[in-house]
Image (cartoon, rainbow, N blue to C red; front, side, top):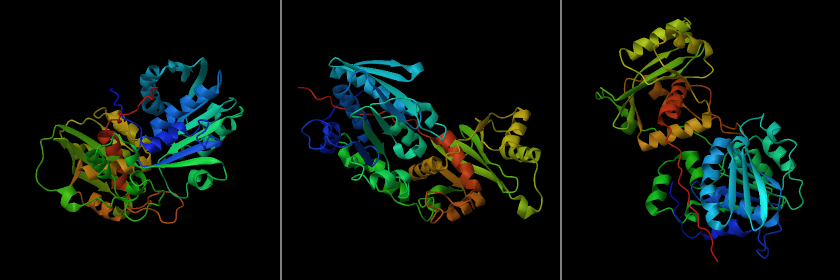
Length: 419
């Protein structure tokens, strides 16, 4: 992975230098950065955090926190390990211990990596004594984990570092930290994509085309806003429906949202020239038909849907344990348990629709119907789609997050300041 160097923008320089004596802002106890995606805030914050720690402390422990350690290592540690030696730092990573040791100017400190994914995460950081903590994507972490990590910062001069993309305006982090930044003696810096000098006009336009609705407001405009109205306002029958034959396809897959009392929805997908087509579907509503179907019955429906095609896999609602077991007993299909992170999945489907990477056959009436009816829950206090008209929507979400999720963007930029 190459590194492209350009001068930092004024906002990035502000983040890099706020803690330095004479900046006029070094008295703050915390720094909070939010705003648009690809604005350079994450990498600049990590670089500033390490420089601050190396200048102020020696022999101390710090925490680098992400939603998962894998994401933290990919987004921060690997880029930093490539850059810091050029800036005069020594770096040593002990992967099995989730530990990064950084030395500079005769100071040497330890940086522990933590994943704040769920409510069990606070136990991981209990008992530590820290001189500072950085949260990458703080709004995606449980409040209990963030507060436990903050409580560990008992070393004199310790500081809190937060960055995130906007979420719902009732989110606890917005209410407790951003809205109360002055009371908490926190420096608040808002970033736009224009604050990243490496993004060309063409790249800026590309990112703006990836989102719509609430995701556009949050990820492009950097606004903490409520999701409302249609979940997929970008769905356009003229663009996303097809009726012409597309088979044979180069790859095939099936996605399934399983229900006992609720409907079961299955979609057969085929890929051709980089586009995945929903070729056929099964939508079985036992309530309407007056008869609940068995797991074996659903397996037969799936086999009829597939016909003689060879599948790459069948991705299934992970909570459908009995149906998964029935499929696995048959031994014909590779069964994949879906990622059931709803908001991340909705974002992925939105991007696939905007990019034209998925299309729906005109015969898939239930998927088309649900696209027109699927709505955000109003006045929920957080982002949550309504639990109705969502069965084909769920199976499409499982499909996209399994077979359409793009590879993580490993691009990063930086510019070591030289005397």
